[in-house]
Amino acid sequence: MTVNAREFDVIVIGAGPTGENVAARATKGGLSSVIVESELVGGECSYWACMPSKALLRPVTAVAEAKRVAGAREAVTGAIDVAAVFERRDRFTHNWEDSSQVDWLNGAHIDLVRGQGRLVGKKKVEVSSGDGTVALSARHAVVIATGSEPAVPPVPGLRAAKPWVPRDATSAKKVPPALVVLGGGVAGCELAQVFRALGSQVTIVEMATRLLVSHEPFVGDLLAEAMRAIGVDVRVGVAVKSAARSNGGGKVTLGLGEGAPVEADEVLVAAGRRPRTHDIGLEAVGLEPGNWLDVDDALAVKGVEGDWLYAVGDANGRALLTHQGKYQARICGDGIVARAKGNLDGSAWSKHQATADHVAVPGVVFTDPEVAAVGLSLAKATEDGLRVRAVDFKIGDVAGGSLYGDGYTGCARVVVDEDRRVLVGATFVGAGVSELLHSATVAVVGEVPLERLWHAVPSYPTISEVWLRLLEAYGL
Image (cartoon, rainbow, N blue to C red; front, top):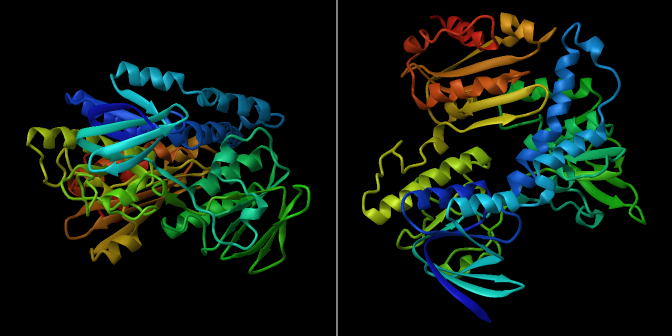
């Protein structure tokens, strides 16, 4: 039974970082907004993904880096303190309690309705909870910011074996003696390194021929080499054919398409994601539940008349990254305000168009070594019909790299559009390279001519001197 009915300018379904940013931008622009959330305010990133995973990874990379510096490695004694690592992780998640995030909403003058939100018609949302049903209506827009969830592949016996998904791994209270990770993507590689460092015997099984297959080929090769050096059993080009957990919740045995079966205490499925759009009432507006929501560059959902329904972040499938979702949220929130005032700017790179989604998506894999990339790979640029050239340089050959760690191993690549003489992509692998990424992103987004980039002098002796070496290798 409906117990309350309320009207706002903007309704946002999903209170993760993306939803929060849409509501904040709309409110800043003078519109009233409400967020609907069925779990914790702050979403996946705050409690089960970005923040806890990076909190778990930081002690691992700090110790690894110290061990690569003579004088410091002698001071590193004993093993990582697992309890202290988990305790630090718990501080970053606020022990899975969201009152501070709710306080932020209150301070930003954004209303919150807890419960499961469903579209029931044009600009109408019903929210169900144990307290009843709240009927919400929007004057201007409804925004879907429900994110994504792990996809469990249809391997016989896998679901019955009750595998971990990344949420289970990032919130774990104990370390399994043996762990198999299904998937060699970002989450799989990061969590494999975490649990190996915390004491697990770890095996990665990846169906593709290398780890991080969407990156430049040398990325997966360098990362696999580093994984094997710390004792991770990396199996690429191998499919999982079956899974079975022994009686009483014991070990899991995985049958593989190649080689002997592998046994572990837990299996972590990190083999892709699917949109959380199956239970939000898409059918009420003529859309297929469970699908990614196709949007234009203003983030308006295609196939819905009237430009009132929007989708931001993982739900639209454009770039499954928190920072890119927040970028879309800023574009979307400002665009909703502009549309309400009749001054939406539909030109590329305007404040109301998510142009960067197509050509300049940055991302970091926080493994050891780190992987940082933005824009197009050589293969993708070639596929897109660009006349490009790749330039590589070993980061350990610059002074900053050799000072950062003894025997520094890493590589940098830039992809140059030869017709325009600008960068369309850059990839870095090595310790500490995540801090190189924003300079690359600026160069790609700004389409900085190589001749002008030549005048951006890197400080000596820093790892960023690799920029000079790349330009010299190009021929400047």
